[in-house]
Image: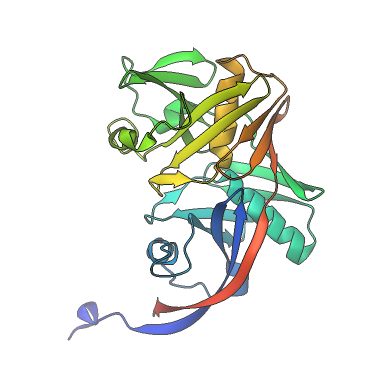
Length: 289
């Protein structure tokens, strides 16, 4: 058997992890500073690790790595093994973790969607996601498909409903409708790579009053509802502000579990809520060598 056809050898590895959640949006945190991470296939690991029938179970895996541009680099691997660009609730979980273990009160995190800051505000995390980015970065530019409504908000009609599309480091579509609307019916649109090359998250927004909205999110990579989505809540609040003429200063977003407050400030759009440590553990995995 020549070298090219030799089977990959495997050895068992004890992998330490932490489980955190923010408003029920739950993650496994893997901190590369605490284990030998050579040859780890995070995509394959996420597909196994995030499945509650096979392993710990989670909405995604957050991998912390060294960064030359920020305090740390944060990567998110989804249940289906794909890598997303950033995660708002994930940033809150990481900030809380660093506050608990290293007594840090603020952090800058490098992600594929940009560099973002967070700091502790009592028991809550205040996260600055900056300003809306170009929504066309996540869509195939069909001039006849999308309509520009507001700066950095475009829209399209899907099955008689308006999709408001935004980019806050992650792609989101927002529908204004009743919270019981079945978002799974739009799966074929969310996964249509001729429109959205990497897929898109979908939120349903309903207005409670001028200061409060209800949001449910169907997340890409999970391809199902999650209890909460930080970037989805923020994008929905932006739509509520501009399309529904809600409070231009701050909006409370109620999720399936918990709530968060979105603040509109000159230096960016902020999200404030808590994150919590659920448990710490070690899992045995096969590591290719």
